[in-house]
Amino acid sequence: MDTPIETLTDLEKKASAGEALTRDEAERVLRWPALPEIGMLGEAARKARAGDRVTYGRVLTVAAGDSPAGRAEAVEVRLTGAPASVEDACQRVKTAAAIAAGATLTAYSLADLLDLAGSDHLALAELAAALRAHGLDAVAEVPLDRLGDTDNAIEVVRAVLHGGLGSWRATVDQGPPESRLDLIERAAVIQRETGALKAFAPLPRIEDAAAPSTGYDDVRTIAVAALMCPSIPAIQVDWPLYGPKLAQVAITYGANDIDGVSPVDSLDQGTRRAPREDVERQIRAAFTVPAARDGRYGPRS
Image (cartoon, rainbow, N blue to C red; front, side, top):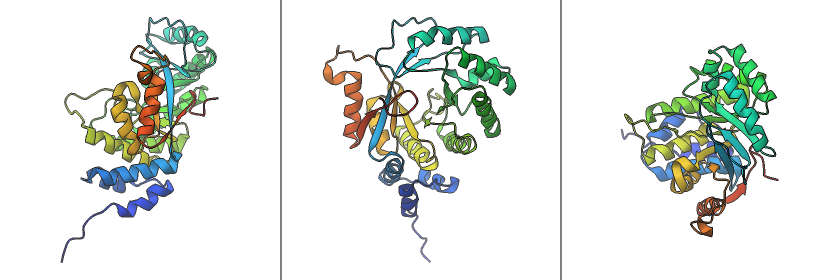
């Protein structure tokens, strides 16, 4: 008897309807050898999520010691780096609140705040409340690979929410290809249990030198994130980390948001290379419609 040929056609209906794939179905997508079929599923999931609209956010990142004169066209001011203490964390937020006036202020990795709180969820909620009182709107990153197991990650997110901070943007600090499906599934479960996430950036922010990924790994990761996490509004790719070329390809595999676009429209390299013009051109090149968003993932007014 001939062995039936495996296909992905049975998943097309679920993708187009915006229904989440199961773990087994996602594994089939990841091992499927032909990228065009994966891209068709990812694109179907993107259209179910957002139609032909792809958003982008202009972000001013502020490292410790930086003193920006203003936020330019940023809709989000994002404080980076691990604070040295609770006092340091609060002071940086207090200082940045004036710069961020009229925009959204986010700060820090949730994993670093958890460390400051001694891994105590009650202390974390109190720290979140203190940061909120100083003007913080949300943590900048929810790194799925640095918050312990899924149950602990859920409780950590709940603690921050209890303290009054948003916990909007799930990220991956260092995710080799073999761990990515676990982390995507974790994002889906956290969203199901908390409803906190507005965006998920599934590609790792730090390259694992021992297990480097390929472009094939990356586009598969984007597609599976789009297919397994339909309740997270934005599947995101980072513009400064991954650049215009991968951002454009990621859209065709299911991404519907580009993060980290520079807020300064420098004309040093000509009008076409100015950040807003560049990102909108790349979005249109993927046969989608660019839309600027605000720092809370809503339409920019």
